[in-house]
Length: 445
Image (cartoon, rainbow, N blue to C red; front, side, top):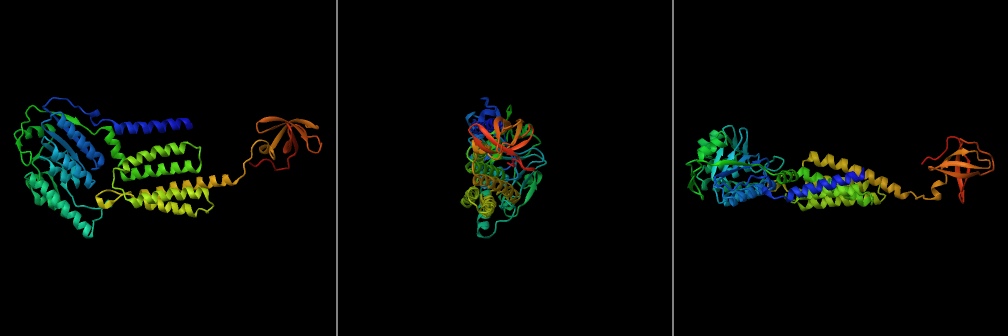
């Protein structure tokens, strides 16, 4: 069972690392036809994973000589830094980039507003919406004080610059930042915030034929005969998207650190250390992509140190309780919400720390209790054991104890009948000296 688990853990880690190391284009249709237009998926929260994917996909499109690239956008928002990376990649792309809020029911929320305004062509499906780009913390609260004004002013100026550069409505774009305004596709088109409304990608390509691009890549598009090549997010980025979720990254780090701590507390168990190592590596991959606060890392390390100390010192659980507190605080403070990112949910940090920390205290307590007991091996292990008489001990016979038959003699010379329970009192060479077991007694080990 243990070896099977070890093999599974090793396979999971190998698969994860191989997926993360796989080339970005491994799942893409990268044909060399110049009339092929890549349609790149950008779905879910804006994160380091999606930013890396868009940068890679646009680079591939440029290498293929694509005359145009479409980004299919559906996002509630995400990290400010990742959003700016995507904007830079769109602006730097040699070909015009169309950001298309699609399919019906999709949205370009928060960071999606900036990405849409960075596009050379901004398009939306009819039943979509755009807006609500006010900077907030990961808990949904406003960022107050000087810091809040600084972030809001910076975001307002940024979105105005993007909208103005592409001939769109900078006032409405800024209003989405300052007042969290949100509008439908039709309202966005009427207000000049977007350029087109198209029901699907084929209709979008048809509408782009003859469209005059404004801004730095000013040109008239000729999309007649162009074919779409769908580029969905490959497995490596899907996996990274999961790992960069703060709750997932925290859980993996926590499981990893506790697994390693268990291995330190009880060396030789192997499985906790191996599984902990796998979880820790995966958690580290996600954590390093996020804005990490040093105080959170210090508290997590302190928590593990306190748990290890609890397993080695007779503190009555006090140090372990402090470890659980440090674990909770470390989770809540691990990431920086003021940088536009998410933090670990209290509904995850508190119960998980209590359950895992409590479990570790229980295991550590048993390890400490076992260490306090003396070791009994060899002959000492037989002393005091209860044996069953197999042949009459009169005065010598055979008894069965600890899975083996032994020669035995009665301690006081009194015959003992077969089937009786006896206690091993002495060991004389290869002969056990036994006496009748007291009623209700026996080996209680």
